[in-house]
Length: 147
Length: 255
Image 1 (cartoon, rainbow over the protein chains, first blue to last red):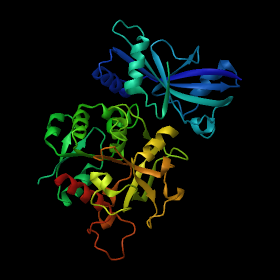
Image 2 (image 1 turned 45 degrees about the vertical axis):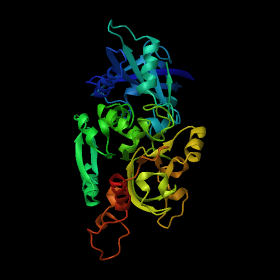
Image 3 (image 1 turned 180 degrees about the vertical axis):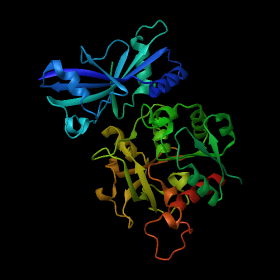
Image 4 (image 1 turned 135 degrees about the horizontal axis):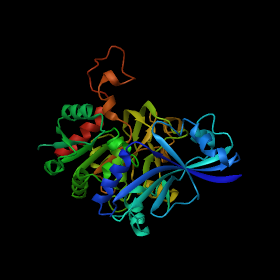
């Protein structure tokens, strides 16, 4: 079994990310740009070369008309990024990925990834990410943040 | 004494019309106030946050609205003792704003009304909620009878109270559990709870007793025509049980 991670983002304007960006700025957090992706961390028994196409074939998580998919090199957040996951989320494939699941994938854990960039276009500093997490992006009563 | 009540609208709010109509039927001088006119909120004596999907529930239900400039006024008013009632999405906003249970600084949420259990589906169901505190503990419930049963409609995908076990103890021990789900005869058990809400919670009150967050909609069971248990032949326009809570709220604002 091999852990793998995929990021599913929008190829259309991301209104939720824009609203979050405006709110973060209103809170005084210095963010120039904000990217939002849905992150799926899989336990995959399938052929690694076909993972992207297998995920893209599941219409519960991927709509080719509005989504783009990227396989990640790591199952951990990148610089400037926080992953927010629900504390009591179930990780059963059928609950997350629809009745048929995805061939080869035994378990799946979903996060929402927020990646913050500063005015130089660089990933935001860790303390900036922490401020965004603590003041807006994560409700610690029901969510965990990894960054 | 006048009772100027603002029904606060955010982009995505619904239920504002029946909320406004019921407040007026109960004697309240109520108006809709748009989120883009936050300064106007200062002149009101009390606030009602109706249901809906404020800002499309972006990030989390209630999270963006909790940081809206309109909520600056609502939070400031609540901290000065003004009455605030949040229903459904309005209740979620109050939790995200930290006004209920109110055990931490404002805008530092310690609990949430989140995805329903046992499966995270939208639930639309007629329910009853039972007053679980002494009526005088909360200004908004002061005119209700002890253990009053209020009919309402639950209509949400995220109405389950969740918090750490320690904080749930604090909520219960601190008298914050204002309403619990019950049967029409007042019995409280798991079958009355439509979404596995912790402690059977349907509503929370803050420590000071001036902010109440209620997940089901009493304003949708405010007249006989939307009350499932109405007697045969009853006048459809006669007020039903959901109006009781609003009468108590308006009486408190006028007091």
